[in-house]
Image 1 (cartoon, rainbow, N blue to C red):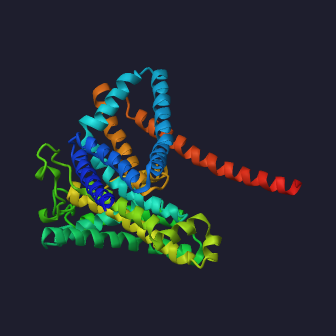
Image 2: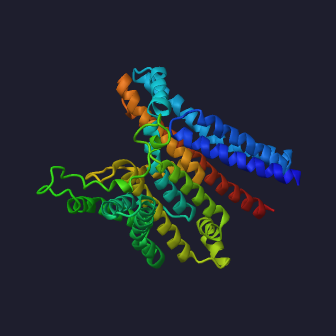
Image 3: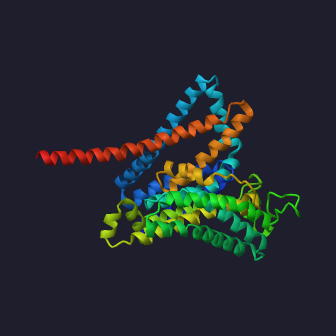
Length: 415
């Protein structure tokens, strides 16, 4: 009984410490990191109490092992980026000092704002990848989510909480519906989703100026012809500064929604029947079919849910940051979501951290260029090297497995 009470107390402390720490940290109260670290330590003790010291040690080693390859990849990319800077006449120490100070301290609020839509599009692409699909058109679904959120945000005048929830659900559903054509074509004809989703991404982009003109951006009647009317204030996402006065005035709770959605997607993938079937289809369609799993149904589920997640990125941008929609958005969140998902090895929790890293590199790059006049292209080189090194590991593992199978077959033949 005493052991059970201790476990309950530890769970309460872990949740309280973790949630409060995350809220404070993303709101630029940096001591929140201490609470997050405390939550991890408490979880280790929870494992010890519940499963014994051996299980707790296995968890700790597994946790460190998961960090090992990304950390090595990032360190190697920083080193190679530094060598490139030296070769081109720039001081890497000054550059990296400005880059990391700008991304993780000075412009931390920009890093968080950059990360929010990337979490959603990264989750979208990661979920599709788990089913063996490549939702490369996440950018188009982002546009559809943005347009739907803007249209609803201008018109819905319900109580704030109800109105915001409705906008998230309806706009996300509109983006999901936008993926119906690629999903049906994939199931019925085998048409590759890379082609169909990419074509629809360009279609959505070119539809957006028409939408903007119909919602306040008509040059004949507006002095701001390239933006829609602003959404209602009651449909704005709440700002951190309303509760935490030292927080930047632009930071909104979209980051908390994105983290909650990432946890939800992780739960779906690894703790539900739907997630199991989606992953089974992604791993081996023939084996999944042999188990009675419907390939077509799970392809539909994966592509529609991926569209829904990308649409939420657009909703967050409209309700949280822009409060209107701009022409020639050139967001790039869908395309960058591919990098984020690959870097996270398609793990929904990993997507949170890779999105923040990507957002911080962009924010730090802006600060570095402004303060040291070192070109921002250096940051793109570092990002490219990080991605290459991480993806190379999976390519090596893939071909390593192939070679291992071949060797086994040869040994059997010789035997």
